[in-house]
Image (cartoon, rainbow, N blue to C red):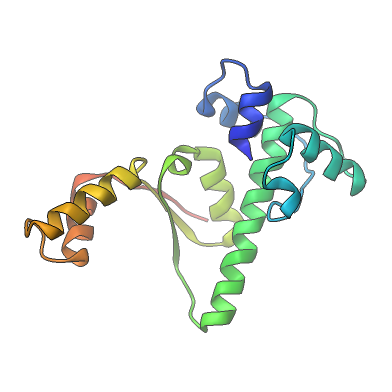
Length: 164
């Protein structure tokens, strides 16, 4: 969602700048982030605004308010998903691991920790490339197994921790 909005109205702003700007807004509107309407809309910005309008919530204006609505909505969605997973599995999870580019979204990670009440471990950002490399290292016998690979990754790449 945030990538689409950045492309549409973010101009030259970085994701970090968008996170910082979103954090400074006061908008409290939420949208159902898992709704199919957000899978590939013609305009994500317009779709977020339409969803807010339909729910009679404040309609975001500009990149920062729109990003704030998206980040808060994603954090709520993550909390609902974790709760569902715990109910289905009968297990309680003490942490959420966020990997890939989303691990750099400081504001979203803090919101996720608060919304879920769980510790968030963010990183590494290049998870796909690292996963491919470690799979090859396992196949070549450089690493024993996936547990050995996880230990190697943990020693090699720092994780940022967010407390609830």
